[in-house]
Image 1 (tube, one colour):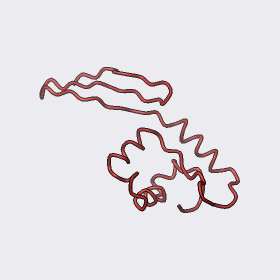
Image 2 (tube, one colour):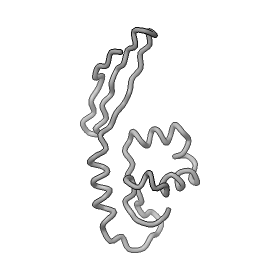
Image 3 (cartoon, one colour):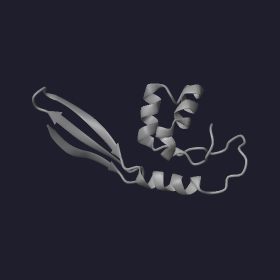
Image 4 (cartoon, helix red, strand yellow):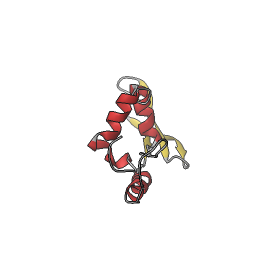
Length: 101
């Protein structure tokens, strides 16, 4: 399989790779994002004093690549599913506030 960089977006940190599989004669584009800076910023924000929850309280910062995946799965458009996803301990690195949504 051949892999080549197709595009680099320095603003979002998303790199697109073009793949070609000569055994099946198929090609596809894969997108990867380094989320280290976002996760570190979320950790720092999590440790701040947030006061009380209220409307329009920021609870998470989600990288674009993760957001697009959630959108494709229909989670972003389903408030209950999004709430469940945000409260899942596996996704704690995207949270910017303690507690439950």
